[in-house]
Length: 127
Image (cartoon, rainbow, N blue to C red):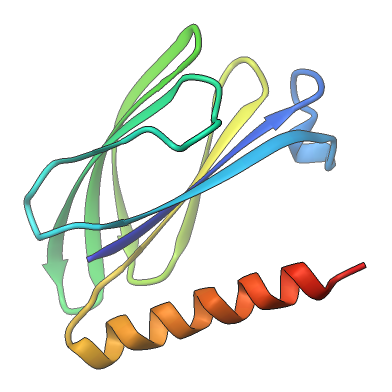
């Protein structure tokens, strides 16, 4: 299972929804089914996330998520379709977007890697 988590901090409460982003971080996790994984994105102002994904069926994932971000904590369980991004907002204008992708073969993992590398290349060449 491949889990991508993007953390967005707005300039003010509710600002992320209005496009007023101050900082954003993304972390990528390669996680086994029913195995907890802990991550602390580098340079991310004290963000800690614990993820435990479960494959529900061929096209759905249940993700248990524990998030600690500065002075806020949240625990939730989400059931999402494969590759479906899900957003969770906090009371302080912070937002987390989680996308879980079921990796069925080495070819799936290679495709994800190539997609991420292409996105990185495109981001570097943007003005």
